[in-house]
Length: 296
Image (cartoon, rainbow, N blue to C red; front, side, top):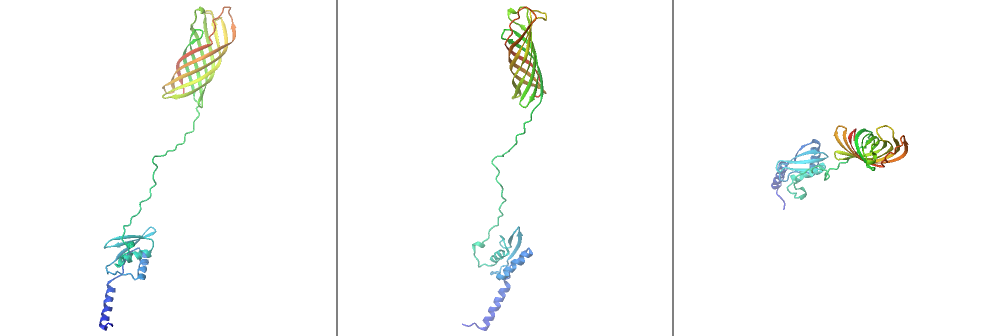
């Protein structure tokens, strides 16, 4: 069935009005992106099928492109190129497209990645290099002693100690005299001098210090039957083992409490009197109380 000439003209005029009323999308934003996207839309011939105005803004976000629908129901899309941006805008301008892939989704920027911290801090510390100590100590003590011949002694001890690493090289001198002896002594007098060298090992015990060590050397014993200087003189080897408890009292000053056990051997006898001298002791135990100065 053919249309009449009047009906055909009316149809053409109506189509022209619809084409003029339905404008292409309005684009704003970065000029280069707007031009590129508009070319894509013109190539597709995209217009609003519902003749509703479409306004979109196109911007760059880093290496991507963000397309923002302005007015109506605002939407955002993050795309990688202008062709995809044109497809998104065309989906907004056409009501006949019902593609779930084109449905609006809120754009969520993923939070920056944070490396998980260890459950507890790990601290690595290098042990400081041990410093070798070369400090000097000097000490003096009053001593009381009891020997295996049942004699009691009193005297004094003087010493020095040089620290070499953990150990301490020592030198000591001791003088003592008998204050009480067996009944067979009568009016005899006896005095002794010793000189020993050795080593100590100090270690800390809380706020105090302990030292253990040994010494060896020579000693002499002079015995006289009365108050005169004549009598017998013996020489011999000496050795002892000792321990000391050091209590700081201020600065580098320490209280020195000591105990020792000594051994004596008679190797020579020089006599200037005909009277018999009491037997000399072989084992003697000592207790000392004194002061020590220097770094412990």
